Image (cartoon, rainbow, N blue to C red; front, side, top):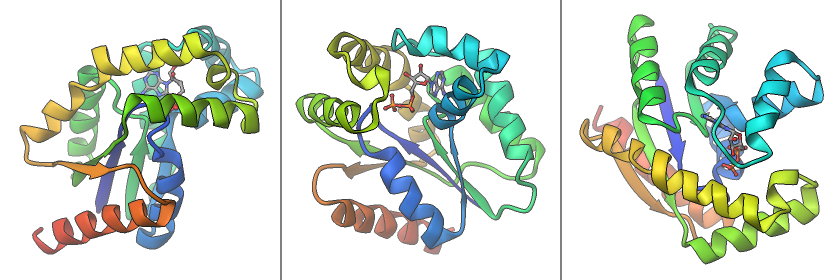
Length: 194
Ligand code: ADP
């Protein structure tokens, strides 16, 4: 299996690149942000809970996020691999994912970390907010809090994968196709060496 953690701060381009990668490598795309937003739209219990955190730009508690993610993986038993987008966002989530995948006889192949400077992130998020109407992209205070949460709680997740030699940085500035090519060349090199 090819299991990729697509990593990076809010606005780094994870969702855009994930959509291209799933087609090329025949993977299932699991975006925790998208799953939460679907639940919010459907007014499920999980959606109501998630909304209260997402509206502030805070993380949804680990326990519910992990349970939801595991359920989504289990919905795709035929999949030959996954792209985890927006997950894991804490070390606790990374540890839970490792245990869960181990139980299925598989593991994370690689973490690809998209690097984009903060000024560019804020620009991209505000522009997405205008186009998509996503509430958490329209308010600069919420955006700033999401970047702060990323720096304080999520950035350390890279160390977890780095310790296993699975961490790769990729320049996230450039055209969508340029960045995609960079990601593919890292994946292809990694696969050859597996
Ligand atoms: P972005 O990466 O642009 O912040 P996402 O759609 O990935 O956008 O996430 C939106 C929000 O969903 C986050 O700010 C957070 O509140 C919640 N969320 C998404 N993934 C997780 C996660 N793994 N753990 C906790 N909360 C999450």
